[in-house]
Image 1 (tube, rainbow, N blue to C red):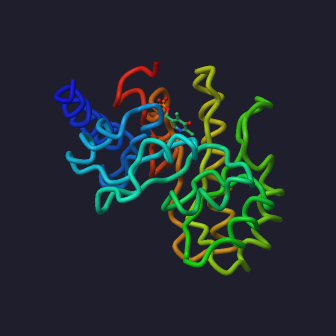
Image 2 (cartoon, rainbow, N blue to C red; image 1 turned 30 degrees about the horizontal axis):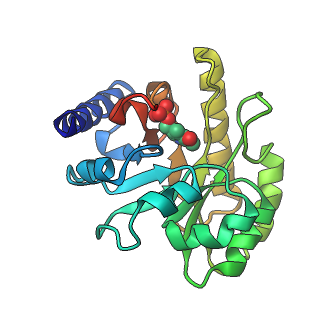
Length: 228
Ligand SMILES: *Cc1c(COP(=O)(O)O)cnc(C)c1O
């Protein structure tokens, strides 16, 4: 089973490189986040030993339970799931970055607890579905940024979105190009230092995401297999 994981990891690397080339982009321009929610720390270590440093998790409590406080040197854990304000303090202790900041309230809360520079991504809702988290529009995100740019410790490193999950290629492209446009607009209007990350694309839609300019894909299922 562990051997299988190593093979999956190699396959993913090759698949991503090929998708990049097909889209006319350099393979090195696309980074991989290994999404390890529901997986054991052992499984994470197996992927870590292949050279993967960046892992994504969606629940504070799960990480608290499964990841030892002294984790392997170099391993970086980012939160990619919705964070409730009352878990903000815990989250900044456990994570190296939060890629799913979706409200000004949460950003303020995080900044209040922080005592070190801390990278975040802002999550934008780019699909129509109501259930999804994220800033509801570019305007709302901009108005939050007016404040976040003045915060002491938060470093806005980029944007994140979850594409529509119903698989319609056209809709997925529209969502991803929306994030791309907002990314460019943030760059022009705010130019946050180190603003370079466009996190979009998962196991089912990473190809389209790469074609639409993603430079960080978040892969779970295709790497670890189906979840429970
Ligand atoms: C679970 C999850 C992923 C990975 O999804 P897969 O389809 O398993 O690759 C990516 N991003 C977020 C925000 C997730 O919650």
